[in-house]
Length: 91
Length: 374
Ligand code: SF4
Image (cartoon, rainbow over all chains, first blue to last red; front, side, top):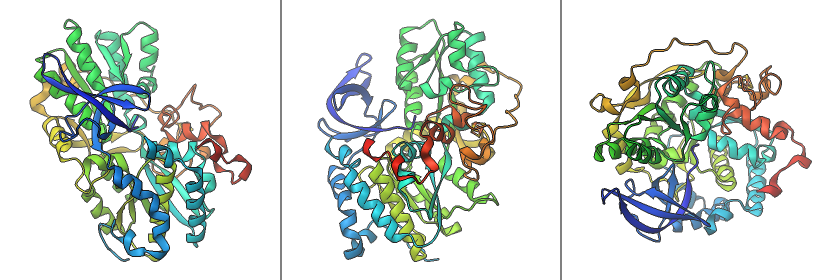
């Protein structure tokens, strides 16, 4: 039930007499409705991660592509992977 | 979306597996906290591909599995005796209470509805002003924004007939509880990416420092999981303990502050009982007192005697990663997904059900690799 799926924002509209802002999100072939209240900056065309009808994060497409270079980076370019480190605490 | 298929690429999986075999020189025990990650590891056959020296144990991160029996009994009571329209996620509806599940109650005529989102329950409440609608709101930090938003929407729409039966659980206190168990042998955690998408990274630093634990925030696709395991094993091999983020495309260091603001409007931190584990201090969220009208527990003030758990079920040990599902004497015998004795056999994200459905999990038999299905 904790599944969250990335989808593309197709359109944004208002419901309940204009009180509630919702988006139509396309997941491959299927379109579902989701709230953008948690990602107010998201625009039509952005990819968002949707969990139980609420978009919880904007997916960074550039970062998504970068992850595939990880294997190439380790070994030769150790300092690159160190950049994702948050805290250094040697045992 | 292009990069979703890439995260399932057989070629990349093979490269990661080869790199893991090169990297791991000693035995290491890692726990993935999240049931979604357990499901993905098992379903995709990844456990069979790891070097024998790496042991993955499966954590308490299935919210359906840790929802107390008593609360399920309460939900069944509300549906059967109080005539409410009882809504929840499909997994939750199937979990047996002490007498029956919500699905059993539905079969016997109660108005129980399986919904994809709590926001659909708000819509039902608006369309059925003469019915009480209760959403059984379980979940980790990932699901809390949606459940909180449903309460705020109901208030905004002036609905008097919507409330939630909330059983929210939090990941870091559960990790703490796992580490404090004397029998634990966990040396590193994969943290649940979607939880961190909301909460950010900072709350894991005390665990890294206190227990000298490498923690890697990880996604859910096969490539994510293998990369997360590799990052953790590299730290272990080097004697390091750092917090790293494998899931950078989704998780920002600060998480989602807007989502946390909405959560804070609706929920407050409380001690919470975890099924199979017991009460963990500060490990849950409950509806704030000022929103009591939207809190089904207060609105209907149901008291139901606590029923005992099945004595043969070792769910608590499974949820803490001390025992594997197949080490339970009931696994696959008296306990199956059709007739579960404990919650980890019910939800597809529970460790027992994952092992049952993908049975070849512990064999290191190359023929059983399911990698072609990735
Ligand atoms: S196999 Fe069944 S009885 Fe055993 S721990 Fe899992 S849920 Fe409980």
